[in-house]
Length: 268
Image 1 (cartoon, one colour):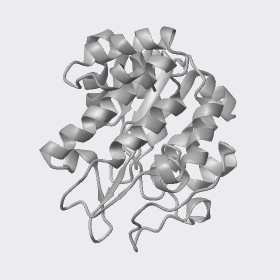
Image 2 (spheres, helix red, strand yellow):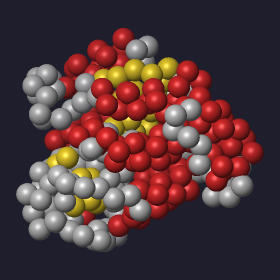
Image 3 (tube, helix red, strand yellow):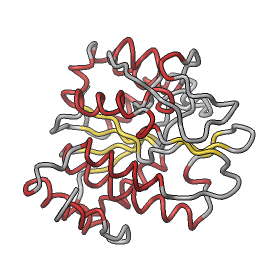
Image 4 (cartoon, one colour):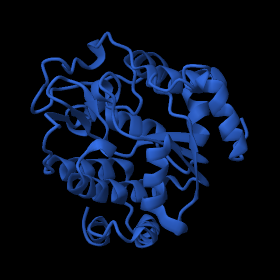
């Protein structure tokens, strides 16, 4: 990404309104800016970051699962969208395996119709192998989110006419024993470095998608939307995260989320 686009990537994360303003200007002046170009630049930027204990292993599916990830962006990410749903970061049996946000293998392959070559991360954890579309484990968050989209809209095309789903952070973090670490649990200086590049990428992606509403899937994603977009962006709301760690999500996640989306003004 050159010229104005490169300058936008260098904007300070401490000025979210400036990021959003520059992203708006870029969308009209720089046609080469796309979800794919934003993703590729973000992938390079996060690859140079370093993380200390308790982080032991880091996966970047934007790199080793680039093929299915970019198929998802190109097939379903053509804007404008009415609503963009923003998740936190890849799960070990979802996007980590397929390159698609909330990317449970069966939902990505059988409902979204996406497959593709998935390689290996630079360092692979013995307890969390990347098997790509051969992974037999399910990602509960992904089956809930994409299962709701399937049950409510029927086809991916109908869902993506109005909605799109992205992850804020593209990296999956693991402890030495294989336990997942979420970005909000990183030490402060590592958070700042990571959030700076993720905030910029999110602001550019939202500008391209041009939604009237951005919805954080969980409180963390809502906060990052607010920091990334500032007051110059679209409306921001939140819905319950579909994680099985949430007792409320385990008691009818789809019903709760439909009520929350309706309260945000989304017609279902």
